[in-house]
Length: 434
Image (cartoon, rainbow, N blue to C red; front, side, top):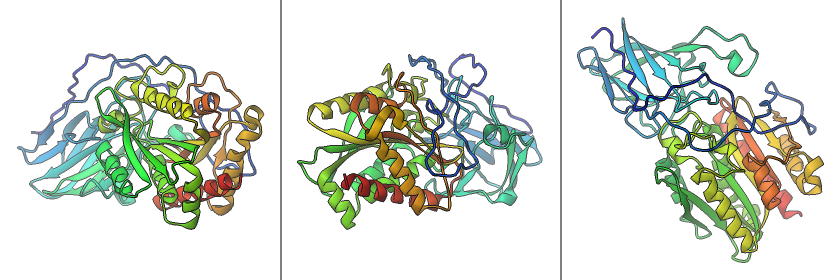
């Protein structure tokens, strides 16, 4: 079969042009760090958070070449909306968003294999976007590595210096395929099942428990992990991650952060005697499992819903925090782990938080002192209204110093883990010295 085009949707949703709605409200404030190349997101407008239609992708297998070559999106976390065979072992895949307007975060994940082993070329093509994520390859769906640079060809390079304006319009991948499927993904694949497996592996420790605090639109569990070394410890931390499904680098850093606090060092043991840590490692399990670019199954950016609380995910965390506050917990720190074009911190300015928020800047400086090889920008906000984003809600409602902790899409994975570890160690040191 020389040409097959498959773009099957279960909705007649008319998709409008793409707008960037990412990043927290921000105003320039700096610590002693020198700026890196990425200067941060522009201020974000207030947007409605009432449910909007979501385009569900058709799930199945595309077959070509007399049923000998196959592509599929039939697994959790997949995103593949269409495939065409162009001839001469060249294929074009289409990636579309769950709805629009949406942040330019074009997630893709699919498998490909063949009965006739050979080399093929795959062109990545997107709806109203450019090629943001450098492809990752896996033979088991668990262990991923970036595709070799010799097998990657950017097409129609952007004219900007950084971010989406610098990204290519398309990308071509050259793969050697055989009978064993190869996973091709925008970032490493961390579905709700894989995250749950990680949580369960930590929960064998006697001071860690996990439980459900709510349900998503598709009835997936909103799972919370509680790290509590002493039953009388009422100083608390609130850590969340993956409000946006593709933001895997933030999750990897958060994972290292939590593993360090849960570790066997003398510092961690001492810290757990005085502090309880609450963690929601996957805020958007529906979006992650459905391969969404940004939104939940309500079609909403969860990090715009921390004022109206129209979505079940944000409601679950709000209600949990209110319960714990009523039980006498004092929240002394909050962090929301994200990913963007490069490492950057989004704290609240001390002009609005005063001395209580200073610990965030001390923490940033201490991380930088230990990791001087990669400086991160700091872009603080002096706006407390609207709360809208998690960091601002955490502070306004529960008076906890809080931050949006962003890691770069392409930040080396060993450095992500080291940064998460150092961030945990420095935070434990600062909080224990209060």
